[in-house]
Image 1 (tube, rainbow, N blue to C red):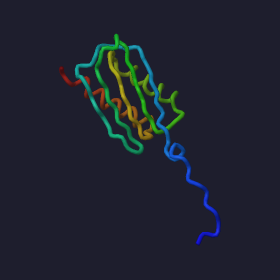
Image 2: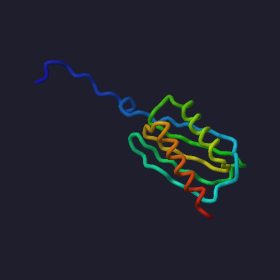
Image 3: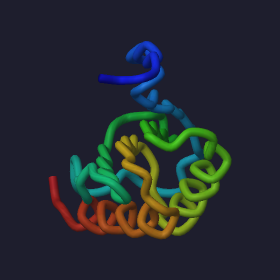
Amino acid sequence: MVGRALRAALPVPELVSVMEHLEYEFDGAGPRPAGATALAGVVGSGNLEVLIEAIDLGGRCAAVVDTSVRGYGATWRQVLADFFSRHGMGDVRISINDGGATPAVVSLRLDQAAAEIKEEGP
């Protein structure tokens, strides 16, 4: 028998962390890649999934991030800006599903997907 009262369970929203949704737009710095899509990584703890799609964005680039770690919007912006400065691309949308990856892992997965989409032909 329990000698003390137990507190009531927390509501579900307080038990499950809410994903943070971030959206960014960057100036394009090159042509649309040769391939149509590229996928790198898997969603898991400390990892992420990166999808790059070649689509008409008027030469611009877009990135959408869904992450389980809240409050790092400025870091995401910096990592993505660095990626676009190193890979001259335009007309691409990047979708990221993050499971708490470090910036180094994010850069690795972005580079892997970029290499794949640049190599693929139509």
